[in-house]
Image (cartoon, rainbow, N blue to C red; front, side, top):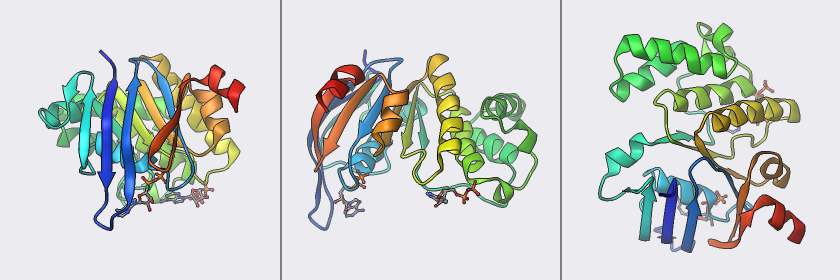
Length: 226
Ligand code: ADP
Ligand code: ADP
């Protein structure tokens, strides 16, 4: 069963913008998959729908065979989301941010503490666990959002433009973290408008433009066409 199965997905916003015009997409378990496209193509809308933040106008979405409408909370437990904007409390410490997030999902505190140590170490943030998040660099804040999402051991990690606006050194550090997460078995989907990012990370690629998938396949065969 695919990690993600999207069929004929449509979204028209209240202002009449057709952000998705019948998108179908399969992502295999274990894949590292990029959604590449220019600003306004529909990438954020697509992952917003998959993670139940945006209501769809039509179509179906299954996460590891679980329909997001029929079994929404079960589907959401399989997903970790890393949004584009920082959305944690800058006046909390990374350790508390991770532990509290897991608590929200019902993980007992002792387990949450052990898990937080693991994810913060994986994200090279353990030495910052007790610092005010506000004092972290931009790259560290982004890795903190990845660490937080990994608290619930999601089978599918979805990232929206994880490295938008960050410099190449910070980007490489994030790539390393993401490659390790994928190597440990988590399926990853990320949106990006950097071809270079998709190329260095992903095995498969879908190119989205004006609300439609215009290319989809293995990175290597698509690169040969571009
Ligand atoms: P991308 O992530 O590829 O930049 P988006 O999914 O954010 O694309 O946007 C797709 C289209 O939908 C764009 O034309 C955008 O302006 C529009 N859009 C996005 N969010 C909203 C919204 N909340 N209300 C109305 N239009 C929106
Ligand atoms: P550093 O101090 O490590 O350079 P910054 O906090 O200045 O990190 O941010 C790095 C980059 O991330 C900047 O280019 C900035 O524009 C971008 N950035 C900062 N905050 C956000 C945000 N909330 N959403 C998206 N990008 C952001």
